[in-house]
Image (cartoon, rainbow, N blue to C red; front, top):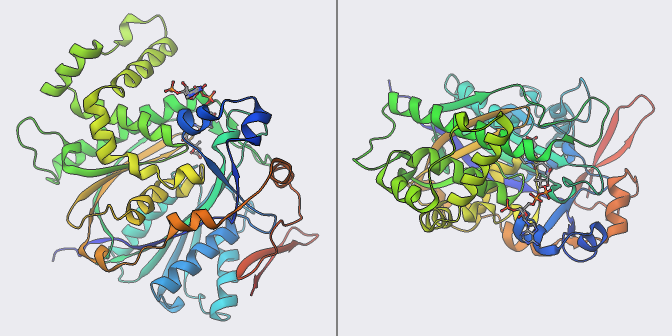
Length: 444
Ligand code: HMG
């Protein structure tokens, strides 16, 4: 018996209402030229969580929005898998708080037969959640909700600061999906690295910026190569002479810690895929041969040379064309939110969907990355149902948020418990009692 397609049926994004612009007051106070942030990094605005928001309220809001849009009944939801690295508790699963909130809307006990787990693996957590949901759905016909929910927070005045953001993306995962059928092939890569981590008790991440970029691209290339090998073995792609796998993808969506990183990732992946083809010989004629590790005194100088080579490749006409056609639009929303960690890859999918770029029958590639570090590359085919799915109106919605000033942003960053917005029509953190238990409510 052939297995029905399994994948993403619908998607809903929830972002905080507050944002700070990276230009103006912020850039001046940090002594940074605004063009570096808007062009060099690619972030124009960063979403900022209010005092009553955390990863649990953001996740609950994303799920509520998704359930309303797609008319999902709680008793049909078998799993709520939440990828997050912004845990609100060291033991209790974030999903239990989320279910507590959802039951305020749907009635006590309405989710009692649903199981939930929190998956931590830095920014790749939501993808591992998705992979697990797909495995569950290959055995049982039901509905799974997969969520990536996070608050990206770095130290004030650090180079990571201008890549912060916050938000949650909820995916409805089922058989016969309307949006994207996921192919049953994942290419993976994992290695122990000290690129980015947040030791227990710390509120901001420790990050080795340049090294984190290197780890990201090398893990992504390895995961892509593993995917290509496994996809070929499984007969997923048939390539004509002179063709490569990315030729058959209408879009490539990468994890987006900041939009320029999607460009670095694309350059490394296209380079891997084009190597050996005539077009790569033309590129070599233009920018020279690739660096060889044996020609460098140590690993670090080789990695730097390799990085510079990918940057030169990113300036070639062939790359610019491929990037504009297949990748550029995936960063549309991230430019206005900053890094939302686990949800970022799926925010890229939302960017394409909201901009009407998902064409039925076309295959897209997705590259997920989590520091520490791991990468997974996979693909999916856009389903005909996408044409009947209304968009969320996310791009217009970005313009209706409230801009805050530097002092307000810094107060929230440093843990102010005073909300700038009075919660309205949303789940909110109402307080944390003396034992550490968090009290949430729905504020009509
Ligand atoms: P930085 O020191 O600001 O970077 O740190 P830079 O000085 O290299 O500048 C960045 C770009 O701006 C360069 O572009 C500059 O030339 C350009 P490039 O040369 O590469 O093309 N630039 C300008 N452009 C226009 N006009 C100007 C100008 N000046 C300079 N005037 C860094 C950047 C990302 C390292 C830092 O922000 C950081 O540490 N961020 C946090 C870590 C991070 O996001 N790493 C990404 C990979 S790791 C990852 O994605 C995982 C993560 O999401 C976490 C998880 O998995 O959980 C973070």
